[in-house]
Image (cartoon, rainbow, N blue to C red; front, side, top):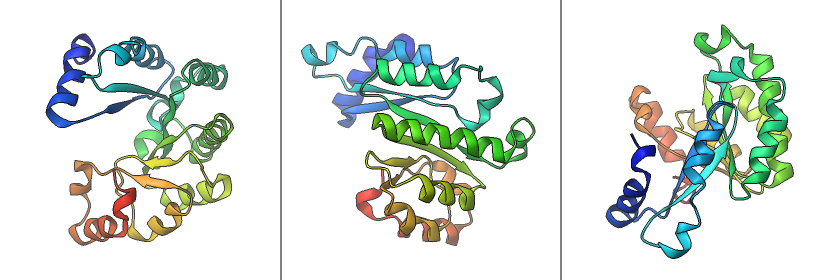
Length: 200
């Protein structure tokens, strides 16, 4: 529905809410062409400033790791190189049974590291998914960071104690309604730990 009404949605986002740009995450190889198609008409931005920009992101989300091809990394590099404004994402770690049934935690970690290294090489920001994996996520980000072009902890619901260390690696945090599933005191502590300039 959104794709078929793309221009109207983008104009309304700008006019009604002041949104200047939206990031659209491609979470598996099968998504990447659709994300590319949403962003192909970006030349309109120069002649139609009443519409917000679409910024593509390309990555392998933990939910879809089993669907990757043998050429996923080369395809990801090609998608990013063809789109100089694109970020990498959404990628990450997920320790729920749903994901562990098809991709081990160690394999997820290896695939995340490959994506983080590509993002650093190409100087792209990264959108990260993390569920029940904060210890490993922090360990990987410390080892692979810092990230001059930034990382975004998408829909952050993590513990407050990870926030200061992640900030030193140039992390930002977005909050969604999923924070309401976290125990009240823990959610408040996490929100209070995020500096306002790093809250999206």
